[in-house]
Image (tube, rainbow, N blue to C red):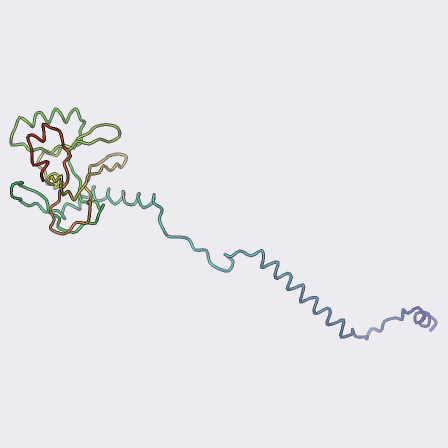
Length: 224
């Protein structure tokens, strides 16, 4: 009894265990909890990456290097198989003899066919050229070119079924151009389309020989 009186006088009455919290205090606690949760949510959101909400999208576009490698691989496959030979037809042309027509269309810069023959050194080629010159029945099927810092020649003189050797010359209207492709263990001289080619077109390329002696003996090199 005395203890209770003392506590009352000091303002420290013993709290009743059944006493409830005031509504004001209860609302304050609830508001504080909400603000705390919102603050935590904002912090968590701030640390999130855009990829947490959207899936990562990787480009399927190939690089220039990858596209070039793929192109070389496709050309190598066509050269090894010789599958483009069937798209070339042998025809007879007035004043020119045999030549080649396209049996299907080709797009600009597309591989057409290989100038297939024996690749030999420049020195060996000049020796053979002198020998071939002694026989008027032997035509000129030698293509000189430079690669890897050296001069080479494709000798396609021997009669074989490969049609690249029969493509005729045109300095004025060539629709093919030559190119060397290197596969590491071997290199090849090929023809690619200078422009889009239609079915039935005669295939032509510029032989490129402008030496006075050759031109004097073959005037058609300059006017076809």
